[in-house]
Image (tube, rainbow, N blue to C red):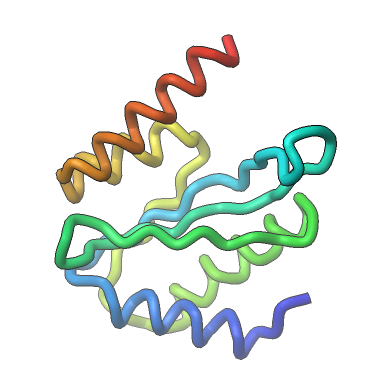
Length: 123
């Protein structure tokens, strides 16, 4: 389990780095960690940076742990009592589309295109 102090410190670091009021938290998702059977569960936190956007991937030990960290981080942002707008997303594609709208840059567009391609391949 990740300590509350660690989560609060992480939230403060992300808020300090932000160049505007928006922080976008993606849903927990997974990807194969070895290309075969194991899965890596993680979520991303995005905010504004000088070059467009800052994106941090936060991994859990398993899906439940990743969900716990995500919920704890969300609450930590609230506890900071700073003027920020939290976007609690429940869709991977909606997350990156919002990021691209908030902080338009080539990198955001490339990520959106990659996610759209991956989703199309799953269908």
